[in-house]
Length: 160
Image (cartoon, rainbow, N blue to C red; front, side, top):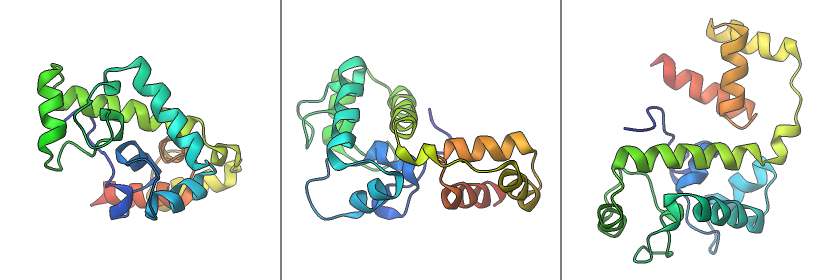
């Protein structure tokens, strides 16, 4: 489906990668907590998503709730407005989810949480705990925006 291990929406307890599916931070909701956890202000988050929309197909979608596919939810969640825009713009669900994965990577690459430097011992402890290689543990941290709790959660999900 374009993003095999896509996280749950942030409002459903998903990790920071789920910010790719979030609405603009205009009301009290879990997006504010997740942004604080990764060290981004609401305005920085909005700017990142809008910039990404300008350079990809996620910038289309004037009939969606917030005027752009960049703000739309996961493809597995039913949404006639999003799906109408995807169809009108020739974007498959697979391509949409691939773009959302790239958006998540862009958001996480710009977080201040990436300044946390885990030691090799921390990474090796993660590797040992999940019986994976050091490189796989490091990759799990990278994919989780350098958020140890999210990396552990994601690795637990992969074990299921």
